[in-house]
Length: 367
Image (cartoon, rainbow, N blue to C red; front, side, top):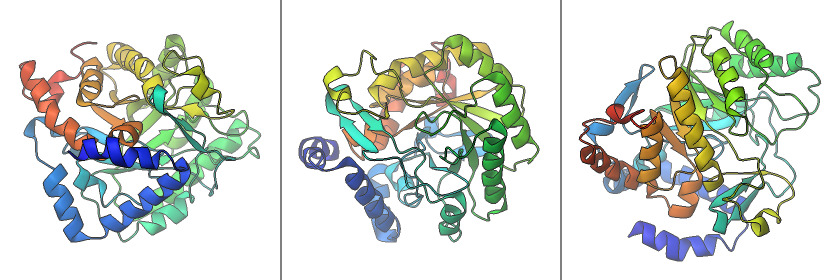
């Protein structure tokens, strides 16, 4: 019923308004709701249920459900208190950078309804890692919260070495923080940054990870991967990544850069001269890369699937291809705030249909 009301009443109203303003209001409301114990209790009764088959321990972290919020939505860390009550099993704040960034020139966000996609061009808009973590210093978390870290979006970084120093500075701030977050995400894949710095070339990636390794970070670290690279390029990157034992998982993957992707409606794409695309245009390539990485590197590293999850069927498919966990954002915009609870309630039915008793048994069955 909530999903029906959202899709047929609320979403049409939201979609008449500026998407960036809707996003800001949504996170503001979510922050306020998360401050109310009675509201969280009501939401938990409606959306948060225990499904033993979905619970798992990975990287020394307990995940009540396998569905998380991807980085890019809660970049000001306003939603950490309310999301567990919606059924999320974990959530990532950020991406955060060493210095604050106000965002790329508008529009930073756009909708492509027929393509089931969002145009994203925020370029790591955030308050800076120090300010954001200071805002969380008195918080406790009911589920695992991760901190996504990336390069400050500035063209002032002329060399790879300068960019690495910037990322390391952000990690140092996070390491000194008393905020009880559970894991790091290293975001090397945002396609909306200024300048020519990149960490896709194996020697660039190796230099970055070698620098991070010297920090001896206290929490598990995941790497957010691109989906725009070829199978061979992704495999080369994974050869580097899996040579560093402190990297626990890769997230596959980030935004779709190909404006000719068959799931993108050309007339919708033409409205945006900048930015890249989330949602359905990412789905197929994300699935392909999950299968590739699981087959070739699954014994060395875990996979978190991200891209084009609109239903339990989508989430389960990624798990059977090799993902131990999944993340989403765009599905919430198109399906509604009840989506995660729906996925959680339907996944046990998929498991039972396949004669499985836990989500861990499903991982990689179709790889």
